[in-house]
Length: 341
Image 1: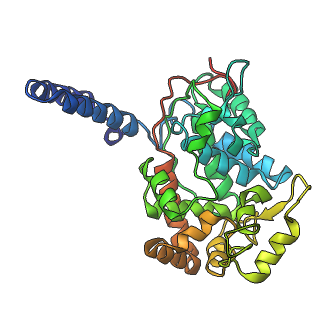
Image 2: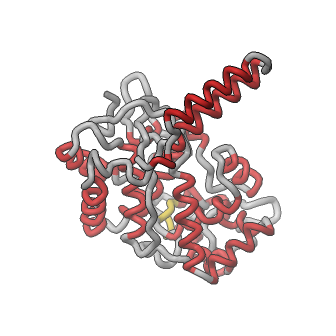
């Protein structure tokens, strides 16, 4: 592990010694906050891009190979893996809790309402089995999800980045906590608050929303925009007319087609900046997409990324590193990603 990526023993000892001096005079609330900061800093800095270089050097190549094969068999895999990582990190931090199965006494995250449509868990299972054969008990499921999401983007024509590794797997997964995930119906203030609670900025919000360039959405996620939008409009007037008509065609008011919906953008299997171009032309699918045009800063960034795919790719990679570093409360390395040890 790189020297500058973790607190050295001497540095930690000095910090504890300094803390002891402060504790003599400091109020109790300050002491608690100080210790929390020390523990948080230590955990965050423990993540390292070369974490498995010595203990499992072939881990990343193994993950890439499995993801690539899965993509050849199922074109929806990249969007699924990217969404899986996002949904993992936004509930309890990036700790692989989204992978755990429900039990008789507990309904897990993957069975919470926002996660019912998550899929491609089998890809993580295949990766885990192969890596356990190579390096038993070393690589966490949380790290596998983060790396698989990166590969899904890169293999779809998007950017790549050095994934910080060293996460541990969590032991708690509750369906009720999926309420913390940002909703496709959120407005700007709700989005800003939701991201800020996880240490993510407006810039991160716009960049990460670009992940909507991959995948498909069921009618339920955008029906609020095409049916009884408000007291004055049945359809959201910010939607481009022909686009709104196409959505109404596939998602009528009394839709009975279970898997009806629309692709997230016009190049649904290619990771590019088409999402931003469509958004600028009134063809964003979700209310949360349209919300990016209601704030001057986020609107400027949407325009910037619509004009420059390179700028989008750089911002997306940076924000993915930041999001994937949201610390969880993981305590173990699971042997099977669906079950605690």
